[in-house]
Image (tube, rainbow, N blue to C red; front, side):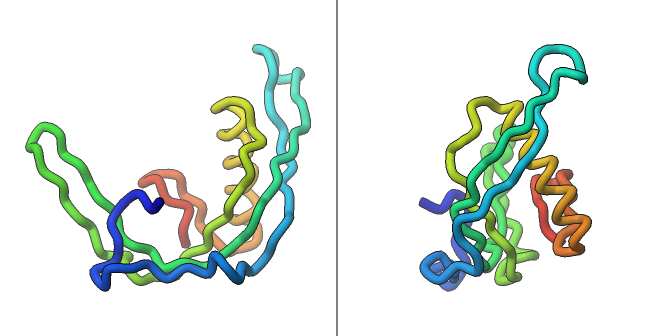
Length: 121
């Protein structure tokens, strides 16, 4: 189930069946409690890494009762990292994404800029 806009062609090209990488993991540190010295090392399984075409995005304006479609990035290649549901809370998920963001920035594969809800380069 793809949430968002599908390319104008009516379909999205994905490498889901022949991914670049499979069966990996990401280790990250997660704070438990209220003190920064209470950190736990956690691990999330990465099911696969695949290439896709960016399909654009929908911008919903509830006050104007309209949906705007931004196709500026439509068709541009992106890297999708599919993780298994190993995290138990939102704080763990946020910690894992922050660690992934640092790794992608260090490798130069992404600006990993969280503003605008994208991790793309």
